[in-house]
Length: 271
Image (cartoon, rainbow, N blue to C red; front, side, top):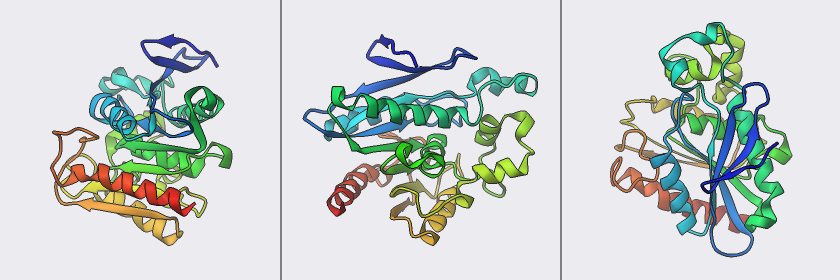
């Protein structure tokens, strides 16, 4: 692992094979032993929405006393979107984003004293494909690497029909693996939920034009079946990609932020 500071960012990981750098941008809250959240912007596992689902989220959490770290994890990137070169070369694909989230959690824990972070309150928040990423961390990581809690907003959940987000599946699995049904099942989160999953905050909109809203219903049902503590807020309007923006989406869906803060407060009181 290398550490390079640049413009407020920290290079937490440089993959030796592809030289890809993974960045964390910290938004440090005032006070001692603050809770922290790793923020994973969406972008179909091809790119990142670093504004509404990154910078805006980090600044909002910081204003509310929560230290945030916006994670620029590895994605397939635009060349893989416009071409199919990953039939020949591996490129970035599963489990690269998951490895980056795991490394981010470890890195924040290792530097908790420096950033005044409470290591028992390090969670993960993701949007769209980032929502899939943070839940997969809660399901696939070893106990000491799991986020303490998860917020998943308008998430990609399944890799199977009828409500799969095909672009995210292509980016995450790679062209050569898309017909691998065992891998599809392994990455379909509704099929992987167990009782070890951390508490989950889940929200999306029925009118989402990008990711079928039934993805969240699949996850909600699986969490309920396994008795995982969670809440699910389903909004009628708001669409997709609103993040923590004050203008995107609808007035209805933007209430998710107040609901999340209230849920998190209750979660900590219960412990």
